[in-house]
Image (cartoon, rainbow, N blue to C red; front, side, top):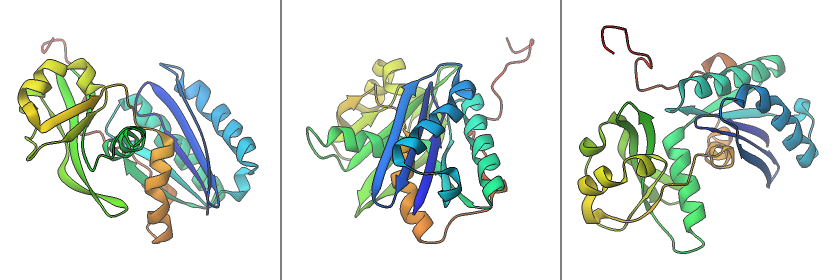
Length: 231
């Protein structure tokens, strides 16, 4: 299938497209300029893939958790493009995409089949999930959740790979909590549209695509701003 994928769940703007078996992607830091950059990046990736938007048969997006604004951008763009084309969408969990990306990057050094994905949720908290490789996919060991760094679920066994900027922001606290179960960390790894697309391909093939209106963010946290009284 010819597919498009979008992820703006972190400070990066990330787009990928597939033309048959070939995969094309761009991933760059964007800060607060994701809304400005995303459509141009989609055009650039489609040109590289030699595809027209009319040839796209489905759109995958990073559903969250992550930056509230970033998640809304990805969901909104996905909804708009999918609705205009009358095509289906697939939402992929940000932490699962982070695990997929970390496994791909780490494969150059050593294969890792157990991943702890951890993103900085700010306010002294992290978004956390743990996955174990199962065939060509992943088995969820700990479901995505919002935790204090010293309260994340414990990982059984050893040789887990920790990834994501949660390990950069709270390295000591996560290290104390997880102990020797984590053998290495990749704090610089971020979820990418490339990983989102790879995870979405079998779901599109299995007929799991949903209507454009189903492209909604998964926040985990109920609110991002504190009231005056709370501050």
